[in-house]
Length: 509
Ligand SMILES: Nc1ncnc2c1ncn2[C@@H]1O[C@H](COP(=O)(O)OP(=O)(O)O)[C@@H](O)[C@H]1O
Ligand SMILES: [Mg+2]
Ligand SMILES: [Zn+2]
Image 1: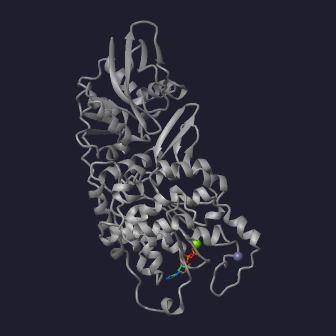
Image 2 (image 1 turned 30 degrees about the vertical axis):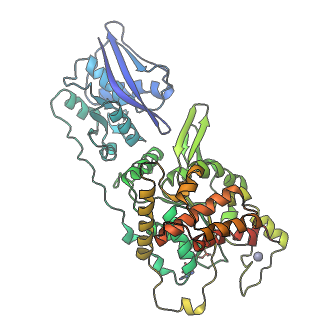
Image 3 (image 1 turned 180 degrees about the vertical axis):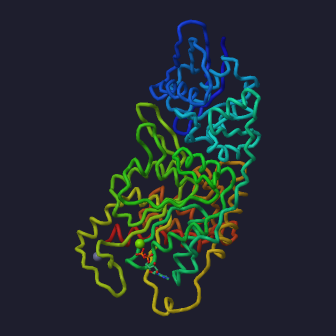
């Protein structure tokens, strides 16, 4: 007898339909899996035989051949278990319901349990795309998959439960669709804790509004880490589409919160300077997403930037530009989106006092140069907003008055985002930072005086073409925050000033 059961394969973030074909014949008992199935798939046989036995389900002595199609695509992992087991139950005449419009994936344990898999959301989306009306998957993944609209999700705890469902004895109840909550801004640290630093708050508002990369430089204790940690409180709410994208990556990485199966708050990922290049951009055997992808649609925070390995920082260059990363391995290449806002903080020199109004820097010029050279010009070029964080004065710090609050700042950010949404409607651009060169002319229209200013400084500052583009985009965001259609001189001058630390620190005369 022959039958086939739908499943879904996954490599990196690329899901693809797979069918578990089965042929059973009388004869010497055998159980084979073919179809470019690697050893992890072959081990499915042991898991299934043991699980059936431990679930009290008898097997018929017969010869079983499973073919995973398309046979040209490599299959790995344990998530085909559920489909293979269902195929066996079907040819044994144990399945009495029609599952031709269902897809099955999940790992089976020796004891008969059904274990969670990574990437369930991506697989459920692919199932739907291929015409599935329902999916059977591990119970633990059910809430996550239930955000896919128009798909009935059956979360299965164990083989016995699936068996009774297939026999029509006791149906598994479909998972109610998950209703995501709203991002909880109230619980986040607030900018009102930061006294003074109005100019840095302004820079961070522009960064959050246009999704621009930021670097804060200042002596120790000026509040750089404190300011960065408050960024999540002013990031605009995620769209549903953004939530789905980020959730898929978190699911594949296995960091999804079971109690919140849809990511609704923009990620804020602080990365330790001991992180490896693979940890940062992704890698290992079956390429896993790195921190840059876990930060997709949110913030990647690199504190104490010069402490990072220079080569590790260099690996950021390409993904910062392309907003996606392709990781190639012998097993294949995986593509992960990584549209993140890079936020970095650093001291200006090893002792930290370089440029301090009162304290003396004790570093030799060479030591300062060596320290700063950890951040290469191409990396620096990609940081749109560079801002100094100066020590706040006594009057400010001793003032009982609260500083500018996150709610006020986020209100401004949301308004600027709204302008961008309208500007980019019908395109896949989400923020000013993503404006491609071809659209700069029409989206960043400058008043004459603004154009005059940028023309004058371009050569004088030795701006690169990339720097010029980025200045325009930051100026666009500054204008959006002011509700101005055209970029004025003030906006351009502000955007240029955000690139002036290059010269003050890196290219010191
Ligand atoms: N502007 C400020 N308003 C209130 N507290 C501040 C301010 N700047 C610094 N602090 C205090 O100093 C501490 C150290 O700041 P931190 O962010 O770690 O500095 P940095 O990262 O620049 O070395 C903060 O945790 C906070 O208590
Ligand atoms: Mg710090
Ligand atoms: Zn110093």
